[in-house]
Image 1: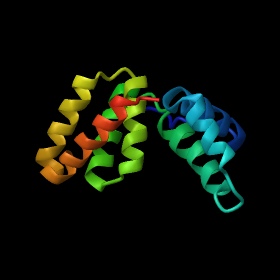
Image 2: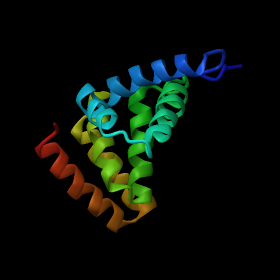
Image 3: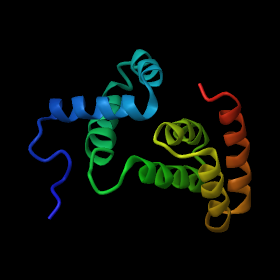
Length: 133
């Protein structure tokens, strides 16, 4: 049986693990901007996503990062989370997906999430790939 990624780790260890993964996937520059813009209102949320999303879920051994990126990109398209989609398109490239593979993910999403959602995703991808920074 597979143990959960954060099992046996303290909250501080999960945070540290999450921050390392978050930086590898999203880039130091992106994470530094997020940390710098943290306020009293958002501090608990930043801690939560670092420990849980990055320290637990993204750190699990069941999928490689390329596969996780495919899942996340698809979910962002399906739910219309456009700002997050742009961020995760960049992350997908960092995780080893090619532009052609991302194109196929977006095309596949047209069938299950709708043509308008895929149309928007292609527009966002065009902007991201024109300026991947």
